Image (cartoon, rainbow, N blue to C red; front, side, top):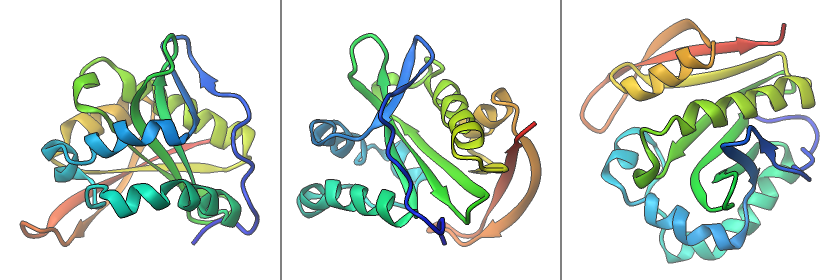
Length: 179
């Protein structure tokens, strides 16, 4: 899955005055690595925690994701300080549809960061990249992510049962479309 062509990395951050979404930098990796070990993060994301080997190859994998059109891995930062507060990724299904995935770092949760970042990324995806649909998927009992989808105006379009480490669970699918 992915786009049929490379994605041009952001040359300027997407900013709303409170948060910004920008290209990932090597200097962001310590914060990303630390947050990847958080139990709440591990509960909801499929990715294992970042280790030394992952950290060493992260930037080359980020560059490959953009170059191949597979995804657009970005970082969420405080707009005033440029300090990382989370990660966000646009995962392309094809040339018209992508799924947004994100995680706000533990110390930053509860400040409305995720909806702001999702709105910025969805706007760029639909207007800047010309996608027709952005999807957001969340476990049914992940009430924080379900609220993010609703706050951002995504409409629930379906659900499916997924296998999980603790047994099957229901994943809700939300969509945001251009127009």
